[in-house]
Image 1 (cartoon, helix red, strand yellow):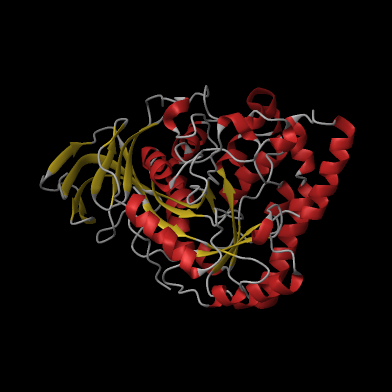
Image 2 (cartoon, rainbow, N blue to C red; image 1 turned 90 degrees about the vertical axis):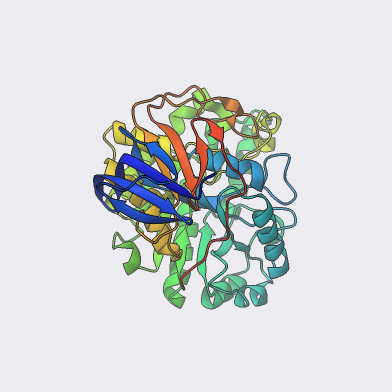
Length: 441
């Protein structure tokens, strides 16, 4: 593919504006953004299309190593670029869990060999790996992940002294999964006694309760305030949690949070039609929670959007409630779901780059990405806002999607990774273009 690309007549959605410009991409970067760029290399007439910065997803589970029957860095990064996601940060709950720098470096090698989008990997935490955390290079590792509940084995940090040390010593952003495990276990026991194996799936909203989320989130915020930590709370799900966070600018605060696509899009009412396909942790809750999350994003209490993309084999999702794994694939739907909310009047078109690119890049201090700016790496996505998207269940490696059958009215036309035309009109043009993200810290 050409190292030089000219995109003519596109409407650039970037930094709060929509401007019709031409874009010249050369040597992997945005070389020129102007009214009339001289055509060079591959020339794309983008009349009627909108150009967005590439999506940066700070929370995915690409399942490698050890869980590749569900997906892999190769398969899931291909789904990512088909949906306009150009960079991802992958979580440590793989097999073996990423609890030391040696295992983290092995994942970097996997990324270098297989990733079609840019990548970074979190270090996992345990009750005993504080020395590994202290040895992290902040310019290389995106952050650490603390399961303050709702996990098993070595990744569950349930010792208060260990938590205190992690919040005090971490040299990078602390990301947290906030649910209180003892509260959840008690409710699982209660509902199992009441329903046996036939627990209705919508009861997931009660078992993975709002109280469990609120209690754990308050604990994380308290620890961060105590130690002046850099804290980012993942996947908010309740209206009560929204008000716990400041709506100051992303660069003016050290305690931030995000919402994930399933919690913005689905509500408890959708368990009836989607069933266990939308079972995830933390749980999808009430319509009033979904509306508060949407408003919290608009008001700035919630900073941006991720996916928590977590594919599972479909047979497993058909099990009874207690044996049914939590999580769903969603990385290919991020942009079209948010654009559907624009169509419904929830957000404006100029909001979308802030929620999916700008604020993520700012929060993690990602070097020269997240914006359409001259000199920045050319990660971007071209979108047709007036064409229905195909929701073929086979577009994900796991073979299913919770969005199957739902109507969307936008389509990703092309995705560009590091200045290369990686995806166009339903076809992967070039693979393995991803490089390790750099952080300006």
